[in-house]
Length: 114
Length: 115
Image 1 (cartoon, helix red, strand yellow):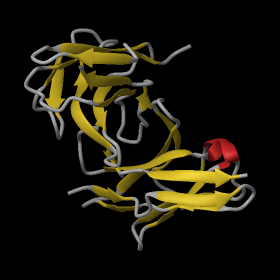
Image 2 (tube, chains in turn red, purple):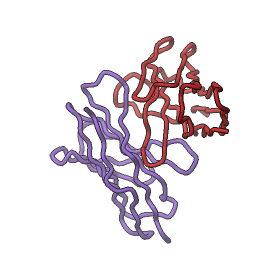
Image 3 (cartoon, helix red, strand yellow):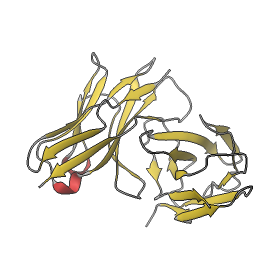
């Protein structure tokens, strides 16, 4: 089945530690996105990538980094500079061929502070 | 700037009754509009979208939405609610004039359908 796989499902971070969240898609989509979801705040865009080897900052990129070396993969690193990383992180992808394309989501990674 | 408002944090309906989840938007150009549903500890699932054409859009699981340009609204509706419809619903908008693929989400509305 085609879809988006996020791993791990749960992740714990220690003080001063960087952690990386994985996102893999087999939908052959060009565009990929990372969102952060906090209770009552909806989804906020962290980074997005419209094509391999290119990515753009979203609305809350500080303390995060990404790479897009392969079409299928868009890992997100939460750095120690992100002082409040506890949230539900969602990865999404879209065909990228038109602005009307819906985004398809993975099942998320829940990150907590130890 | 683009924005989406979902004025109700929660909507409560009885099973079998019609439901409406409200959404209003603001864009500088013409909008692409989307509805998504989220079940606990899951990602968002796409329900339906409005691009152009008929103002009434039909989507998955019996849901539909009505686009109203003069009121800048895109309310989600279902004629007869099911207990299994209980979930978190998000409205989202993209400006046709915006060349990026960014989607702006509302804060979500929790739908509770009681038996």
